Image 1: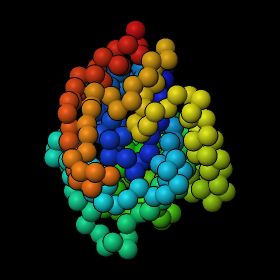
Image 2: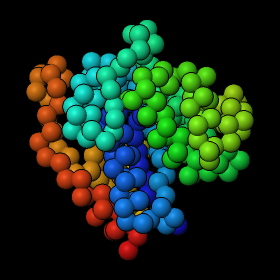
Image 3: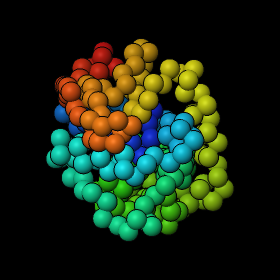
Image 4: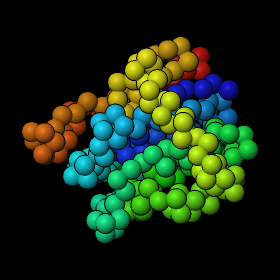
Length: 223
């Protein structure tokens, strides 16, 4: 089994696009049984010492969702008071799933995708324990009771902080950043963009996009 690393935050629309395209490429190339993704936490709220502004996320979600309609994202539909301001708990849940008793790496991938869908498409407050557990109930690879126990014990919280502290040494440039087994790294694969307004006051403008880069990266990973 070939393993690639993906460092990201769930509260990063660019990373969620990468997760979507990475999974699509793996399926397209017939690598579902041969390649797994080790999800590493790069919590933006720890990196930046603040939660990511809703205005920024709304702008990025609108642009990326329109650019890749297959994501089926929508603007935030819930009340402002229900908007998640922390992603530490869902990031912790994804790490907790890697334990064999909870489900392993494949369960971790499944829950990560489901949490992103719950946030970006369903406007659910995934900061909440009850919401994380409810999302996990829809993941057939996750032992929900074992996950609940892990979250209650906080057994994976140190992994989130440890990965964040190790990210500089690993060479992580941002969310998302993909690393292949041979050490090749790719930050925000295939995409370059800029902001139309000063200090993120406008919208992200996609300058170039090459979705085919995912096929190239996965082929390189397994060769």
